[in-house]
Image 1 (tube, rainbow, N blue to C red):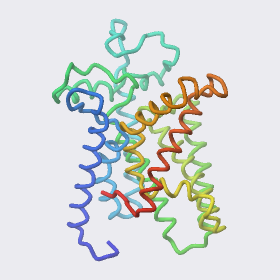
Image 2 (cartoon, rainbow, N blue to C red; image 1 turned 180 degrees about the horizontal axis):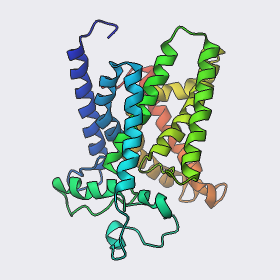
Image 3 (cartoon, helix red, strand yellow; image 1 turned 90 degrees about the vertical axis):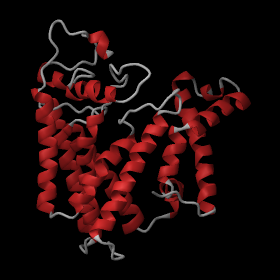
Image 4 (tube, rainbow, N blue to C red; image 1 turned 120 degrees about the vertical axis):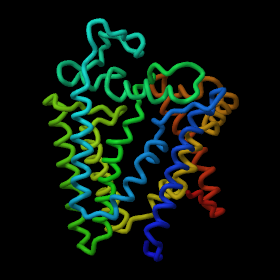
Length: 311
């Protein structure tokens, strides 16, 4: 927009970017399958599904943006709340869960239980419209396509944050805003959870999770903004900057075959128990940190060569 691009040009680029994100997510989820695995819960796909709506909202007034956020969160909450709970004859095995699963919520909060909710029912219809090796019955992790709707709420919160950063107000006022908003959102999410109005469930991105996680993001933003921009302490963040400068490449590497190749090679060259140097409980952490280091070296090479993958 700052370079004079028209509304039509911006929207065309937005739709193209959305489609690339959606299909890139499907591609990554299909890497270990014998045919295209049509699923829409991947992070990139979820962002792609909501991105065009976000850009359209960016052209609207802040009042409309706030109204959209409220409608999204309240409407999504209401849709789940009105969806009937499983009956006594419900086949829990077909949903990939058990009726007495220890993590099942009870009472009104049960409307957001794993694979017995509105989003699961939608996916049983929607995902079976695509060619599949076998009919879709449930997602093992409980993830769902419709989560892109409350995820759009998270993206709208990011839109608000971006506007605050671009304002001409004093830096201390921006810090105060992010800290205050962060604490307020976290407290609101906690109240919604413990009163039973809406549980905090990340995997289906409940409205309470949108609010709660949005508050955490505000506090992280305040922390990084305060140190990097206000205090001008930047050198320490170089490790993170290398990753952020190639975020799409980083995600594809970490979610694709390269990570598996690195992890497998470490077992070959360092031995099958190298990750248990601090004991079995820390094996995942040790392996993850070493794999991350090698992925970072790839990204650092790209950074030095000025290779930046953008869409």
